[in-house]
Image 1 (cartoon, rainbow, N blue to C red):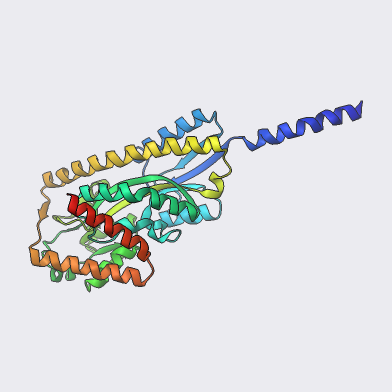
Image 2 (tube, rainbow, N blue to C red):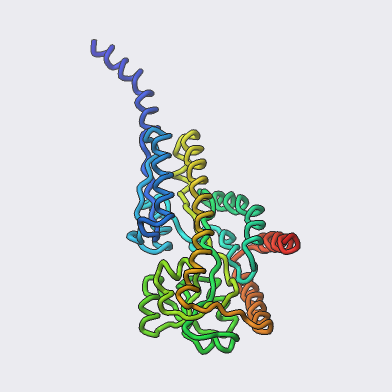
Length: 334
């Protein structure tokens, strides 16, 4: 009798093992984006759809508003298994795959038409390469163009050298641009920039229109240099090792749903940045057009910064060649 019971248990064991292999998988995601923002609303909606379509086997849990620290802290916590993913700027991912932030090279884009053309050619390539290096992504979320903003009118490179320019710590592109311009920037975490502007520690920043408004930095600037400096992007990434433990069916569901979510985020952010530009103008902030001579000086500084980044192995020559081929094709097309 006991033997028959043991035999039944042995027969049930594979079923138990199969059941445990498809049990709910909790994927903890952290981001500095506050709750209530478009990013969070779209990611939460995507997570809800995924949970329903996988019948609860995949459950995303979010930690918004920077409660898990900066993007760099989030990536460290992914590495040690405390988190399984994060919604972070692509600049923070260069330690995983250097070329993932190649869109942010200075002054390579001058219009959104160029951006759209180049991204149609390169997005999937960069996402695939990032996955080969250990992180699964579901698309780029546009942050828009960054611009130099100041409480002083800065028409020439010499004018900028007299300002207290903020650069986020670890931002290789910003550091390369301003060192090439012989400007000594002030390094502060994002959380301290508003205080720095209020106290006069800094008076010149680099950010997107939507970023300036969201972080209230626009209240401390009077001028925007109307030349796109860099193109900002962010991504939702999940540790590949964790993702690979999902069934193929569930992986496909997550990819489909989150990719759709990021397409909506991407499009909405484009609209929001246009609206933010108009809002800045309505606040009395002046958009400054640079004279051709000054513009050429900044473009030369951008070229010098790109060479510095290349020497520091901040991106591969192959990816730079690829993106510039597409940029030139876009310029010819538009």
